[in-house]
Image (cartoon, rainbow, N blue to C red; front, side, top):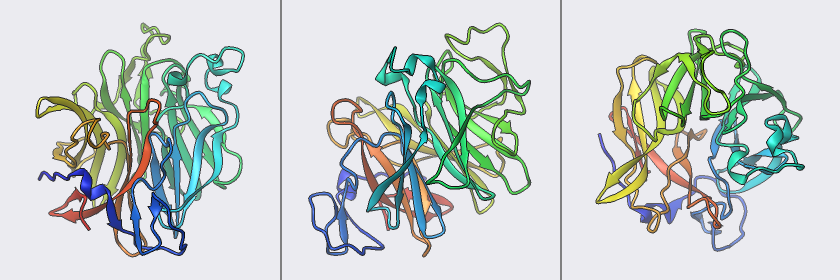
Length: 333
């Protein structure tokens, strides 16, 4: 199944809950409608979850401290900043300390937000610092941040990974997906400890130079396609879904497009679905990285960033989603 949408789908869509009557150029229009982007500001690499009637989200903060912004909404349109995950980003990598300040590009990158057994989990990476996991029982309170470890207990500190996302399965097993943008820019799935802090089938290669790339032996390569990243891992109705984006050549242009794979087994075989046909940076600003989330009354939405990531940042938009023949179609109600 393939579904293609134009940017016009992202301009006006029905909002399912509106309480405020404010009118502005973006967001709530005060008439039961909203206009994208709902946040006309830099909210790169978002992940969104629903816990009861509340929506919580995170977004990358790069070199800024405190790190990894946390936001809250009741309707996916009106958002407020409620916290940050990392108090001091120099814990992640000494190069990020104010005495060095080595790079907007090298700070807190794309993470995931999940809620499991009464705890909030934020897994994320820094391109030079490594893999990390933060936990809290109070999303508005203090987070505990740790370096993730391999199966031998060695901290996954070093370069080359991003886009972490865990999944706690119904059979008691847990998994995590991540992309290595080093030698092999592929998404990998690893078994994970139930507390979300350690790989169970992945170990650092003793022969690798972690200052250049953490080579991890083990795991399962989801797709051996260079540039596949922006991973999200889901399980719905007994099926495993891996969301990611990748660079493809379409109509002579290299664009980043959202893709999803689905399977009855976490290890495949996977069927691939192209979710959205991007028109490129100059037309639709390549909506790609984001999260798929449901509402209490059974509606589904895709919350995504789009933009160059340069001076104009990456703004946040909400796109309606529907299920059809076991797959997802973006841009439909």
